Length: 270
Image (cartoon, rainbow, N blue to C red):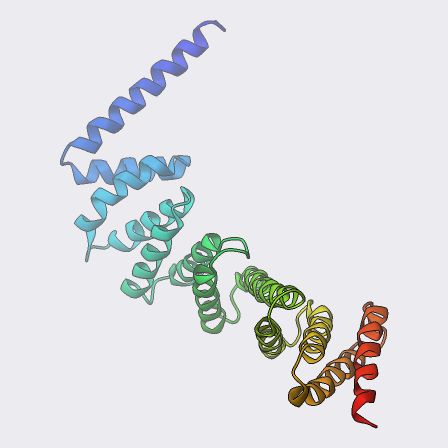
């Protein structure tokens, strides 16, 4: 009997595939719909998707159309075709704004874009889009059961954007230690923008320390007519770091930099 089980399984699978191909190729819309629903319920989302794709246009404006359009979008999500899922969920929301499934569709559409967000070092266009979609969902359904998930995803994406901006600014600072003054100027601008854009960031302490580095490097390598003011700017960056983080872990390094700044400032006090 045990030897027969693999054979029976194979025959069942073969029959299922044969029926699927037959329904896929014929013109019986009802048969396609029934089989699509069957596959969806069984978790065979890839085959369900192909059938829903064929029947969805046939049910536009009909009572079953709403149900089919949602499952069609969700089947894309289930097979991880997130671009198409996001698009189809948006279509559903626009087509059925009063549906019982609208809230879920709006959430899953936003989540589809969240899934497309790449690691922080890559272009963050999809991350920006996902944040907009999530914020729209949060604003539209502030009491939704999906709100905790939406907030977690939004926070994760925001942190990713913070990391991206932080690494760019940090790279400018590093380049400024070895190359032209322009890198230090760019670093200072990037660091200021970061603090403005992400005032509560987990990277805030290091960003402020990086600004001490950049302003010090800029000042010490400036021409005589610009050096004094830039030395004062470096002092201000140091004071800002100390004010916000009195026990900063960068204390010794920051003090060493200020020692160089103050030594240079002595030339202007004579």
